Image 1 (cartoon, helix red, strand yellow):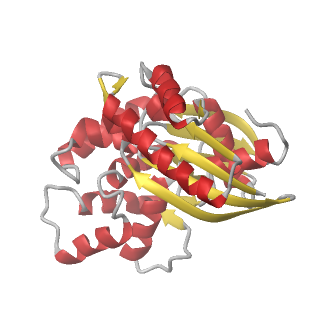
Image 2: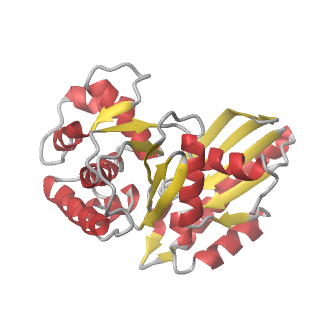
Length: 307
């Protein structure tokens, strides 16, 4: 069976097509548009330009799927529309205009599916799963492969960039990074659910960690297959690319090669990652390239228990 997943996120809108054969799940292809949907939220309201953009891209994906005769499709949206004051109305309009049932995934469900997808083939028995999205950050603490605590935080890489750096700049300054650190630390320190957790292994998923891992490996001369980054080096990366210092040509090349579509969000995302790693006393971060979409398939599609 061929199955398509459309994921309307705060930073990107993705479509992935999977072949499902019994318990075997293989992603065949993926398409994405970097939209920055969270930047279309003004005073808490999703602007109509953002709604039009989502409609345009979902329709493009639907045309592609129709051409191939793929009619099993799940479409969902996360923080950008979930948190908007007019989010329900926006989702209804998008669903009507595209003739697609666009579901709003709660932060709790997002964290659960992230966990199921990322840990399906993970050897770690316990640790923290962290997904730093454009508009929210999901954290799951698991022990013996079972969720113990999960929470969704209202901080994300794109929302930080929009709030502190703005459209006029790509990279944040030292003072803007300090402001991001202050908000992230205040938000994380208010989490009571994780107060007894320390020295936990972090498993990172999503675009922040994907881009951060690619940049990390290139900076430190490590092979692409390396999936671990040392937390102590995050501050060095963040200092190196602050706007206060003129980038040398090799660093410009490095960014364009490793984070071309996330150049404006990788630093805000790594700020959040650094704060979380310090809070939990983690020495390194393990990256996993599976997440919410795969988790949905494992828990809903393979069990015939869709929303």
